[in-house]
Length: 422
Ligand code: KE4
Image (cartoon, rainbow, N blue to C red; front, top):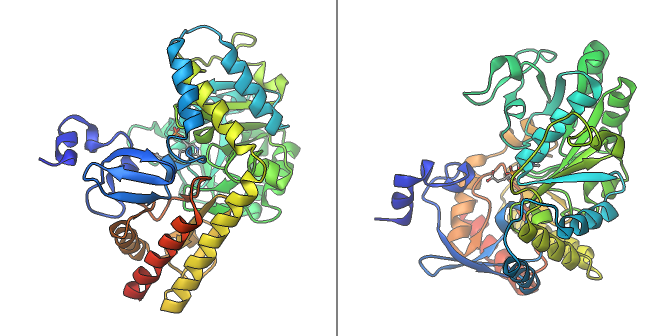
């Protein structure tokens, strides 16, 4: 019996998160035995250059000695106290140092918890219930955010999953990403009812799709003019596209920020934060309830702190950006030589390839690209020992552990694969 068959007997779908099941690309998932640096090793002993990085957290590479040591030292002192510990304060201080828009934060255990809590907070702060998200934006699986666009441009949402109450979904309006006119129209029509906007300032859940110049500034202006608030969901872009995330890269200050992935160094941790006046609405200071047994877990705090320290090494981000750019340009050149239409979006250490000759600025552009060809590319690269995201709607990530030889090997494999795809 295969590992996947055995897993499917006891785990829903054989996985603990759907995208891992290879449903979007076909075939059975590889089971990973261990990882180190830029490498994954599966249970059959095959080795892969990894560009998923656990969907973003592994920016310093897998099993980094400094992170492993930090976890080991913390574990020896106990794994969870259910009481305040100084590691939470230390990591919060390190985060706030990088994100000037965050005066106070709260740790949670997943990006889903962070965005769910941030939505509750803006609803409480404004006394309003309606929110805006964007098509192709993914913010975790809380009910208010598993919502698709309604039938009309200005009508409110419909559940994107069974089990989400229709009445709740109606409170979420889903607009096209990078369409500032649509946002302005909604605020003109219903601004007094809108608590706020949640947006990925560099989208990564429809593939890597950065905000166009002026889009984020326009969102902030439209929301604030209507007395609404803006959440930058930087669970993926935080610490990934710059030390201070996309808001640091673009010089912007959202009202609230959600963070995850890298913040836990590969252990379960996430956070939401913003101005003290907003965060002090949270219990126990204020009336907005939010809680978590393992929030601020000392091992996750230690791993997160070690990970952030590793990214402060001189030149870390310039090397990450240069390596990712070299890979992206190499892939584009190889596709061009093979006559394969390819568009690549890249922001510092994250990128995506889209099998289309057209620019990709929103979800409609992404779905117009050739996802079937992506699936063929995925499997051919996997066969060649390169582990990419098993979905055309995801981003790829480079780490500080990827070497020039890794990039060369990846580009050599891609050259052969594009030639076969042509
Ligand atoms: P988690 O609940 O998975 O920790 O975080 C949800 C989330 C929130 N916001 C953004 C911008 C995110 O990218 C995510 C999670 N990202 C996906 C990758 N597309 C996680 C992978 C998965 O679902 O297994």
